[in-house]
Length: 483
Image 1 (tube, rainbow, N blue to C red):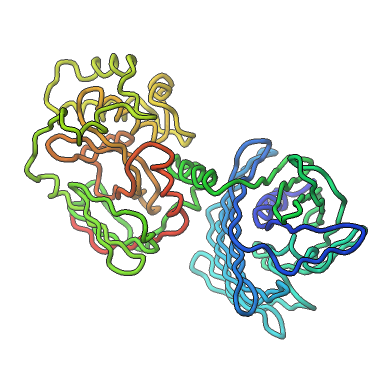
Image 2: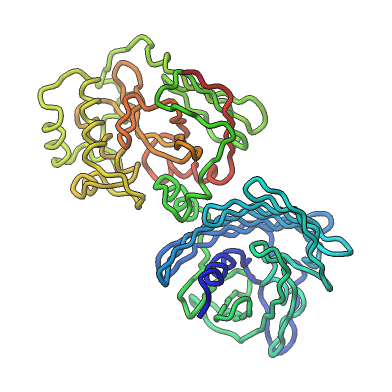
């Protein structure tokens, strides 16, 4: 039986396998160069979605850059494992390794590797939990990155009855590993003729199928115990954004944004300024009563959160105006027209007429009656009946109540600070009470503390999808905090 460590390493390495290329016949098939561009994959364990991976190949003057990123959580045989990885390999035209940068988080432990291939071996610098070490891995012959594993036989002429042996860099164990790949034959996958290969990366069946265009159709371990399946970019982004907002464990390490300067008392902040780097130039900057945003350099945005903004002169609520219409009517997931929502709303607010007091009653009711869970999003009705849901469920239920009560309310998502950890993706709401008041129905905060940084508005998948372009990409720096 495999040890727990070995079984986990198997799971983790599956995320690193790049799409294979066409080939295999009675005569050799040789591919001139690897497929360029992005490819997305979903990882499934016992038919349950447990993670994702993305691979990218870009051509350079001297060879290629191969990028990979992935996040996964899986359980089995009484144990659970979590891992996230971001990696970049610089390779020659024949895919032999030149240099690399790898950042991986395994069971919450962060390790960064970078190095280069020299005539004497692979020189590696390892940073782990603040400790830096240098190592030299001696090598015999050429070494390849793990992301080139399936590409090797196709670039060297794949044919029936032939096996291929190569040495790859194993970034988890920090060693060079010998792997044998063999051509099995032709199969049919999803109605397409597929090339079937196997490798002996670990002592269990590891099968890969690719089509004639070089696209991976399926990868399995143990006859489907674990499946890696291709998916389109839009589906992948939808999964990532929803998983990040739900704070699901399978993507938590990947989506967490760590910061060097901690925020000691989030609830007592009067002013907070943060700089977000690698912010897409095409993504609009959202502002509100408590938030200002401005671009301060290439890919950098300064968000200033100021509680004094909430004391701005109130303006009357005019529900008949067209500009309020979208914030008072039901939407795809905000069910303000539901009789069940209306009945419960009336029970909560009673005869109260003051907008701020209505908001307070609704926020506190949702926070007190809906237990926070790290699950997929539940509808407002489901959350109300089951008494549980993630931050999206809290915000959707509150928004349904508020709109039903005639309070213009918008569903918003972005970042929030988690004490001692960093920033996580989160959903909350803003209600118009003479000014836009941010409230957090998950934590019961009125107003929401100033670490709530709004990045998108709206509850539809399309409106939330821009978050996926930020997850795993942006970094946050604390510029100023006042109490």
